[in-house]
Every structure is written in C-alpha cells, then in structure tokens.
Image (cartoon, rainbow, N blue to C red; front, side, top):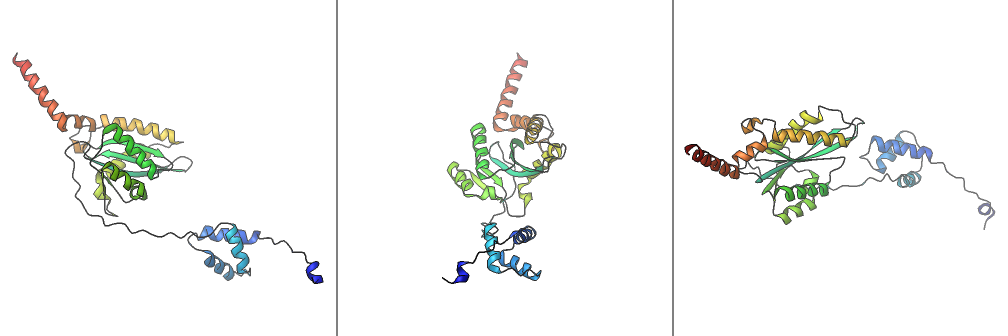
Length: 263
C-alpha cells in the first residue's frame, strides 16, 4: 500500500447546496427529469459533477415517474331522455369546494333522472373508486337497482373496480362523450342548484358542517322546494303522483271517492 493511500482521509462533502438547488428545480419544473434539471444548473454556472448531482437527486427521491396515457374507448352520443319511472336511470358526478382553511374537499352527487330526486351526496377529502362503489351499493340496498347510470369519463368512474361492479350487478354504465357535459344535463343542473344553495352560500370550518348543511338542504330540495321541470312540484311528491304506482293509487282513490259521494 502506498504511503498516500495509507494516510488519505476523505473529506466529507456538503451536499446542502445541491439539495437546495434540485428541490427548487423540482418545485418550479415538476414535469422535467434529472437531465433537464442538471442542464439548467450547468447553464446557471454550477460546476457540480453530474455523477454527484445524480446521487443527490436519487437520494432526495426526485426521480420523475413516467405515466403512460390510456386512450378512452369511443363514446356514442345518446339523447338525454327523461325516464318513465323511478330507478330507470341515475346520474352521478363530482363537485369540489374548499374549507375556510383552503383545504379542498369533494362531493359525489347522485340523483334519479325521473324526478330529479337527490339520492345521496357523499362528502369527503378523497373519494376514490372504492368509495364510489360503496355509495352505489348503499343506495341499491336502500332503493333497489337502476337499469343504467349516466356519468362522465372521470378516473373514478372508468376504473377497473367500477367496471367489474357494473357487470356484476348488470347495470349499464352510460358514459357521455368527453367535453360534452350537456349530455349529462340533469346532474349538471342539480350540481348548480346545490352549489348555489350550500357551497357558495356558507363558509365551512370542517366537513361535519358541510355534511349537516347538505342533509338539511337535501330534505328541503326533495320534499318542499318546487321544481320547474316537475310542474312546480317537489321531487318526492311528483314521484308519488306520476310514477306508475302513484297513478294506480290516484285512480283507486278517485274511485273510492266517487263511491263515497254517491252513497
């Protein structure tokens, strides 16, 4: 062993400046990878060796994750028609808003297209596909199974678990064409009404306040508030009178009423 090797003591390198520079580049240009960040540093006059910079880059976990885009299947334009009975068609969509502390939350809205009744509004910070499936299972157990559900092409709706769920329950998922929200006009109008009545009306401190106010608003919307498309009737009252079962009950009441008057 040579004398120089025996007495050599490595000098610890301070990578603080490199770490700070790489973090800044990652913050300003999150879509760019290592070599683009390194070239930017070189153009700024930093003479660090690329091996050293790459070691720090990997240590910080800044490696750019490559995402492969998936092509959406062709969506067929279908006319928006009001169903002739409850539970024929549902519509689902998402709304977003922020709390007082600027933290963003989401709401999953579900309505019955027949009478525009608000079936459920799920509020939380995150609503992945599993949560969407859980909400739909809850509604099916409570109201029965619809023939189809209309929705957009959001990642929560086109996920594998959602597709498998629709096949298992034999429910047709009707996707609208991308960029055509008017093909889901029933839920779009409902979302606007909900936003004006709740989200844009109050400043919320936490999710519990959002949920409580949403429940109060849904009770009024379904049972009291007149709906222009339903002849100034509330959704629940409209369904009782105009649904096939409601028509039969109305005719029966009329018959008994005439019999009573004749007696």
